[in-house]
Image 1: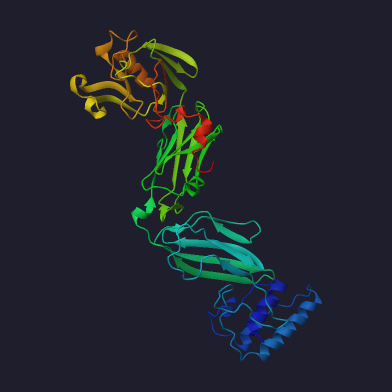
Image 2 (image 1 turned 120 degrees about the vertical axis):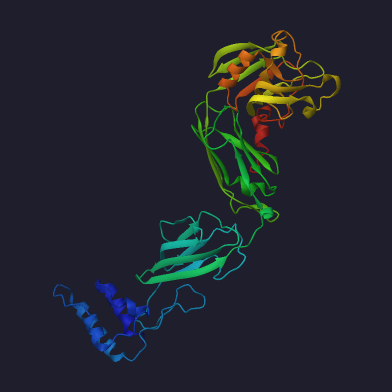
Length: 447
């Protein structure tokens, strides 16, 4: 026969009056005396139906008969494998609490950081779940049915977590779960950090790819790519493209639409990168696409046409690489970086001997390849601009035109070169647009 306090709790739920016995039920006060037990009964209400009076009479009789029992014995934590889940086999007092389950064992050590904690209930529903550490709570979502709770964030290394859950059985009885576990410790060499370009809040041109660089190689690219997202407003189709184990690019099918707002979410914290490596941190970056600047360089006519949002703003006389020794590449290039003043030493690009140069403070320089091609002011070659190619591979123009173009331009603006038989290499800068979209997409880990 169960303690009288349990019977009182069961009858209280049917009658709906406040439960003054909770403190006895949970063992935080001594067992109630006969006199106290009488004060816990409801004041008679003539409006209640007759069966309630019979229930009260049963409670009084049972309570008086069992005052020698231990009414303060702790109830089990439901779902605890070390505790019974049934309080009694009495047909009058039998409760049906929800059984709670967690997918991480109580007291577990070296839990993998890629674990997504899940809590579920059978024979009832979950009302509240909290998974937390000293750093705060783990984000998660409770199903509308209350059947389960699933974490949406993974775990941090070398951290102790506490799981607390509250459930309710089909008969209204309450179930509680509390447990702890500790995750595996990881060194920095076992974690890979994502760096993202463009930067937060940056405005870039319509040719700018999203670039994610990892400082430790990623071999499980599928797992990572499933957690890397690019959302554009307005929406535009696009794809990831793995350049190497440490770098992934995303570009739309065609140039970005002017004025697009882009959100990048690299949600790889705790995600397995393969070979015992895990993502170190999530990254979220928002950037903007500016006006549609497309510059068309014709190396046969030595001219650059500058278009903005489809409108021709200016045609600039230019000179490019002397042929055949320093032929400038044909193809689609993208402005990588800008310098108001840039020292240029030919030895850094392998040009030595009689053709070597070392020019200090070249003005309004904009890089378009990693190998050293720039657009810049070249006052020393004005005589050739618009008529012949005399440079070592850069695109030179007058200082006045260079400043005007520099002020107009953003990183990510497009420069389309034609007129030579030397192609632009896709990996020599932001050369993503030199690969057909179908082929570009084939380098996605999820293609």
